[in-house]
Image (tube, rainbow, N blue to C red; front, side, top):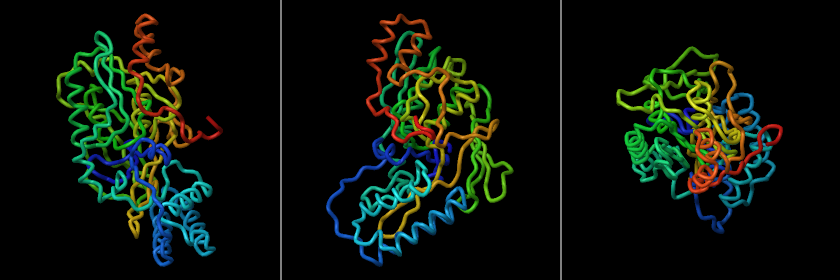
Length: 373
């Protein structure tokens, strides 16, 4: 969704979360699991019933939302969730939902001292966070700039760091964006990147959001409303070039991907691929395409509920369950080396740089694609 799924409609718009395991391993939320007493019966009913109602109201496919809700209520009545501690309840409800219909973003989360990324109560803390989401950045070779991301947190610190990188490396003839260890986030950082990389406005991605979950706000330079199908609000995500003088608009652009590359990072990957702005090198991405919002539930629980989907406006196809295929398919560990070889660097030098600038984070696929992979 703007890679964002719309976890919440803050600032630019959406949050493109990674998947259940992806988000956890990417550090989007972390909590210490300790032995806890079972949730009281009355509290249990409040949590599960509000989860069911939220799925009915907001889930991107109304019929699927109703099916989820119906099954949850049946399991609640059957006693399946009775006597469970909060963390165990969240785990089992999430597993049940995935069995009913797999969706890499849908999940119930237990109470935490720190709200999930995208929750309304987390907004101020996220903006003020010192997190930049940048793994490493700098000059790889003469005229070749590199920036690697692990997350798009949309914090003030992150946007300032990305802007500083773009201005410091404005003379680059080649820019390599590494999202091999990128698990998701918002689209604010991508909007900033696009404002330096495109020389004219361009349609990037379309997004359909379930009308009941849509929070109306004025159009912006990067997100405008279009006529859409009944029951949904359609918007177009745009590249909006800024007035900054930069050589990056004409720079050759590579995007490096892995099976871990998820959500907001996939949004960036497909947008740059379908507009012909970048060459994608690596592995087919994670396939976390649905965007959503965080719903805060009783007793401190929260749920991430997919409320819409992004897709290529030319084909009508998104990347949920199928990922984004690269132009040049190689193992993720070889992606940077491959890009440097395409630039004409000697193999030994390309291998050395590929090893030196390898992402620190995970690059392994967490959720199989449809049909395996």
